[in-house]
Length: 381
Image (cartoon, rainbow, N blue to C red):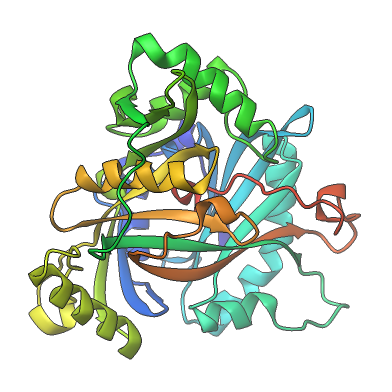
């Protein structure tokens, strides 16, 4: 098997097409059987997160076909008082060939070392969806410690919350709040608020004007007006969030739903008749057509309290199309961003793991005494 590296400087239409075709063979098999469609650009999602990424492609020497691929996306983040570079390991896909599986396991650590050397990465992370039991068993089951495989250390548990509607008894937004869209006139106040809030978040993506500009510039189709900013009666910012649709870079196409997910989709159809909720896309299994899930990620979420959060959700939900829902990440101890009880919501369990070679010392941020909630945004999963 040959291993080749694809990075921004050597992407060609041919390798892009090959990876799209290889990637389309795989489905995620959690509570919803999903196919991920990268449209016409396999690397489009990576470009929304960073200017630095590397995809490792393993080919069969005889046939020249791709047998496995994995990507690493490097990002600058703020950890304590330092700017550090971390990498997310993502999009690991290996064919069913036993030889490919065995050979890729031998390449994993060398690729990490290569990323560390070539990109200056200090820490590696990966996100694991706990509804995908097969993937969970592969990565987290007990291993023979004598094998030279990377170690996975739990950093934080979190949930991807989806908001699909409101019950009629949902409390109204706070009347004293004024919610405005982002613009040049309130940009300085917005930045000051984000810097103040993100200062207490490990691995924050925004810490100065330049990092903020880079982050929003990468998001395809994102505008400053996508920010919703809550002002109190003293004209001080008390919360903000922005929404972004990932459908410009990739689509999530449901092929089938497990029983409880199917029941939830049926409930949303009933709620739609009463004006409570927005429906979920129908699966390919029942229609024969590929209809992607329509949703918007909440990004740059920073709030003073849960009442402000719910008021911002009202405005964000009112801006949705009739088939869209909201999605965001919630770290379990953060009570401010729990889904409001009067909203129709669902939760998907995830965890963020730190990956490191067997010989590396465990970093300080994994110590149990470190309890601050890191920044984990859905656009980076």
